[in-house]
Amino acid sequence: MIIKSYAKINLSLKVIGLRPDDYHDLQMVMLPLDLFDAIEIEKMPFSPDSFVTCDDIELANLKENLCKKSLEAMRAKYKFKDNFTIRIHKEIPFASGLGGGSSNAAVVMLAVNQMLHLKATNEDLIEVGKTVGADVPFFLVNKPALVEGIGERITPIKVKTQYECLIVKPQQGLSTREVYAISDKFQKARVDTDGVIKGLANGDDTLIAKSLGNDLMLPAESLLPDIGVVYDSLCKDGFTIVSMSGSGSSVFALSRDNHKCHEAAKKYTKQGYIVRHCKILL
Image (cartoon, rainbow, N blue to C red; front, side, top):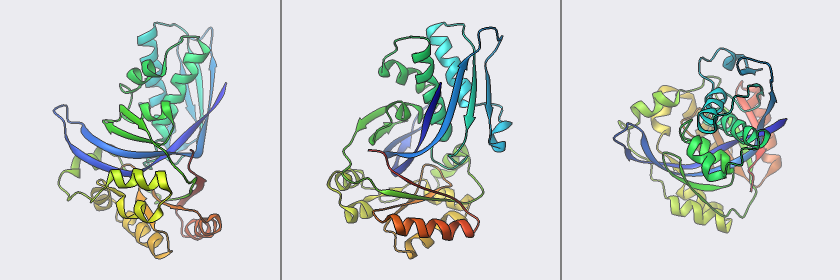
């Protein structure tokens, strides 16, 4: 079985506060993208273990892969003995704030549910998924949504316009844990979540641009100043809906102009950035 594992952007990310368990309560508007990894998963009837391989050298030596973690979480819940081989064909950049690892984990859960006829509901999978990673529940839904708590409360939202999305990522990635660890030392952005949601529903680019923001951008930029360089450059290029996704290091611009995104993609690729040009999924 081969399944598409889609990326996401955080159009807005507001840190509400630190929880007693040291996680942060968040309020986010998240949009899925038509940028995807391909996950190939097969049952291995006589294998003593499950194996995960990846064609991205940055991920090949990771000690903890979220696909394996999600598989074992499903095994603990549903008590199956089957083992699998999972091959990840990467297109979503690593350590980019685009949710690649969480998305991969979510589609493994969906595939196992289907292949083993477990008949788990989406609500059941979300309960398992939130033990694997904060973004996993969103990818089990994979629709534009308001996402709250640590990622487990998902409310679908309406989006009128299927925007082009230009993603520009510095070669260096960022650790989510490191960004959150210093985030409380920085001033919060002026994020208007309701404004973002209203702007998306009405196709009001001006309202979206005025309302969006990411409370993690300043701490991420302190670790990797190139984020600010890319952000300023995209704004100078005339893009108005610009922000950083997740904990970085990807910066994105939304636009209705395919040609403008295409030309900008060529420019940033020549400058040595990792670039993806895609669309949001409705």
